[in-house]
Image (cartoon, rainbow, N blue to C red):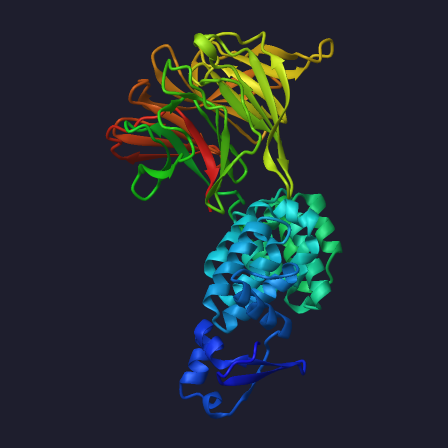
Length: 546
């Protein structure tokens, strides 16, 4: 610190380092030092020297340097986390907030989420902890590949909190079992491996090969005995009464709807199971007022808002795009993104590729371009980049959500017509002309008009109404090209009062005064009495919602 006439104090650190600071400067910026020097603590009467136990010397000096520059001064993530820890322990409030902002902006939503989660848990930083937790749960499969070692740094409690969560995004329980066994080996905690495995692993979701493999990975007698119970159960030699049957893991989603307000703003509404109503969730702030025919498309934890016409018949177009991150809760303009002039149409992600199809362009003419964009994420760029445009010879009229549904079925873009006796179109490359794509079509053998559709497991589920406007749930097998009716609803379809949608594995039919639901996962039906007032939408989608 610079020499002043103010009283100073020398701080001794655990590593033997020491430095001199102005008492008034520390009191001004830290509630900890204010209490220490102005209260009745021993240090307030101990002279000009104090010892700080368990405080990182480099972290403390970085906090002081950040105060001097009025910004966080750091040389990497480790140093940044030291700054956060030191400022939290010593109550440098301004530095706490600024360091959390830098961590959130630059490191949180990345492979570094696990150590950030661990520190936030230790320091009791609830908001940062929750953001890191949700990011890890949703991106667990990726993090397990890209930064598996970070999980071995977690303590037992934090590891269990993640692995036992039903919202953990994982395909195979064996990956969780392997991680627990490896964590026990790395941390020499073999004695608690049994408790963690039984608490976190859904052995009932494993097949026989995985169960037998699990036995070979542990020497713990009780764990081996538990796994053998599940093997016997699958062989039919034991009832489930002796087993802990967990509910299947599933990323939680909530149904959302789009609605334009009379004042020109557009809102996303979400379904609230407590009030049994659609409630306002997010205003599409970047979208120009009175924009119509825009696209709202979800990819993982991002909501993309693209295209559309500003006003109606004004020939003024929105060709920009934005995305809203559900974790950071911030909008970001897609740098360099420019779409063609497109009002309505359909759009869908297949992996990291986004396709925009159909709609209208200038002078109400059909937009015959299929635009393909790729997600581009790097330190320098985070946007959608157009890579190809194709002529759309198959769909030249009325290609919008009223008449077509877009799906991603086993990494293939599929377009389904919304008419009686619907047709399935699967997109594939045109080997004869690279500037075009081919559409392989087939009848779906369904004598009903589709309202909504979703891919769940290996099948496509459809909500459709008959010639007599009776609504039913169907299961379509693409390989067999056959439809099977699963459930018939009591609601009579009315395009002005009825709403039909899927929330991942639940079919939802909204009548005037009630909601009928069918769970495809559990094959159960539920009916709720409710009142929708004047709310109505034909634009539905689901978002991850932890």
